[in-house]
Image (cartoon, rainbow, N blue to C red; front, side, top):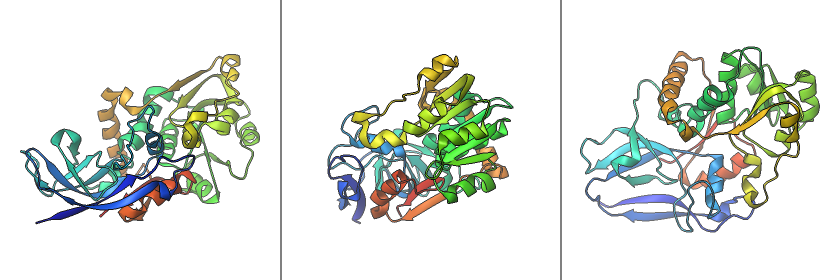
Length: 334
């Protein structure tokens, strides 16, 4: 029986914003499975800011060629297999790409333990680039202590919202920076942050001086640019700045706006350190175990926004870069 796959391909390299015309949505007929192959019906596709850096043709992350399927993590179920031990119906996670059906080999996927959690959680709170990244960034790099003033940017996004919750759990006073009234309300009322700063409608520097008059002890940055400068200007002595991402810079990586206030690090005997979750392979298991426990007992919250249909992936990516999503952004492929 013939089977078709619908995929999102890169039609042209973005110059600035990755607008929908940079992508094409294509349908193709699939050949039969070769030996040791697995066919997965993709249910959810992760929409991640780092994808924008994969569309340049060069860079730190793996790159997408013109005409190639957009790289993305996903979850789904096996619908066909010639690989021993991989059976129809099993839930799996892997780098499936932005498409409805992925054909992979066993080394490209992992089984999902469906013990009371939805599949989408394995891209969100339990996702390597989301919850696991936040846990590792907090527990292995930032290490906030009880009484610290902890600030996180993109605080209502997938990584930032979890990072802030873990820091709060560890005893820090948490201030989230995000954009718009809806996100301010979510940070305070749903996530229990101590304060929130609306960078779209407030002066971040002035608000930090009000909320942290003695300075910021730990900053977990997902944004870069002017927000990073504002927090650098408000550091306490011996502060720690952790660079997780820089979404404000990804549309123009050839002209990255570096921090102009970096000398505050020297003046205040402070440090700045970057990381990625795969720098700490030994911590992925413990992170996943603890995040799973918190999800099941209801003490960890991650909002989800889901766009229906594979053809909406380009729209979803643009939506993220305009700061529209609350929590984890996903595309439901099938």
